[in-house]
Image (tube, rainbow, N blue to C red; front, side):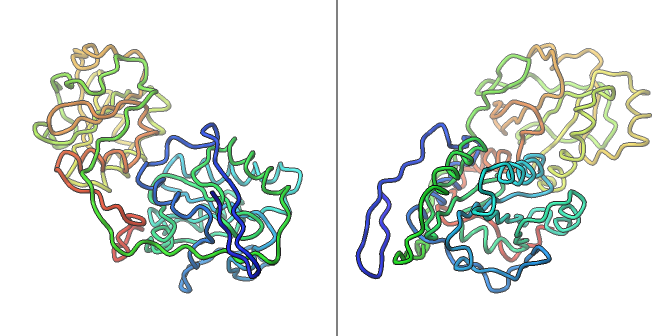
Amino acid sequence: MLCIATAILTSCITTQTPDTWKDPRVDPIDKKAMEQMISFAPPPIPLDATWVIPDDAEQPTWEDFLGRVVVVQSWSNKQPSGRLVVGAVTKAIRRTKTPNDIVLLTIHTPMGHDSALSYLEKKGLSPFTVIDKTGKMCNSLGMFEDPANIVIDRNGVIRHVCLRTSGLLRAIKELVEEQRDPNIEAETFVPPKEPTSKPALYPTYSTNFGKAKNMQGKSAPKFAVEKWFSDPLPTENKVCVVEFWATWCGPCIRGIPHLNELAAHFGDSVSIIGVTDEPPDKVKNFMKTTSMKYGVATDTKKRMKSTIGVSAIPLSLVVGSDNTVRWQGHPSKLTPAIIQRVLSADNGEGIPEKRGRWETSKNHG
């Protein structure tokens, strides 16, 4: 039920997002936080926000967007999914019949904010963009690491959140056809003041677990390697990411920077290990020209790989400290949020039910 306070009356409009429009990849914690804003105007944009603005525009406020449909899309240039989504949404809006009736506001999350501007310039993207260095704006909107969106109607009211691209286009089409009512003044969303916590849950199992046995929820194969090319990393009583890869595998090579980023993000709290079955000399030569900032080892006997029947690479397993596989799939789909949920659940931590999870005092550059 959408309730809008007006200067004359309060009108209630039934609004519901079809399940087929929703993006199932958004973390449930963030989805819940964003859904709280439906039927309200969004929280104010922080006065100290860092903007990237098209040459012919001025720094806007939400009020400046009234009369048009607004798509707010979060992203990070440090994640493959983030890099893809900002370009895809930009192109999708341009292909609509009424692109001038739609405003795209992208919010670059704190992760990798130092390189956000150069990425936009390199790709020739020029939407209104807030580079959220501290996470202050992301927290107010309930956004964390997963790319997510918010759709605002012509009256400045949030109508939909967390849509997949096809659902976003359908939502835009419907809202563009609605007329603005100048008498409507939407109430601004005010976040709850008292956060609570609940036990952390393991991530949802991946439905695309690769060409291998689905080991999710089962004991991981015994970790076995013949030779390390990095310092050996601990695997017992430890959250581990094990990636099966090879030097000849193009997708594996393209994914190395992503694994480097995950290793830098989690440090010693997670053992990230790439395991190949190639001869040691071949791996050594490859690493002379390729920076791999995580554990690298070889197992020419293919013991782990054979146990779970891996027939296509790359493939990643996230193994909890209890040696249970908590996630399995393509490493490009492995986000920091997935690994963090395994860490938190293993440690018995509580997940704060609050708006956003960015530590605003931390440098996430």
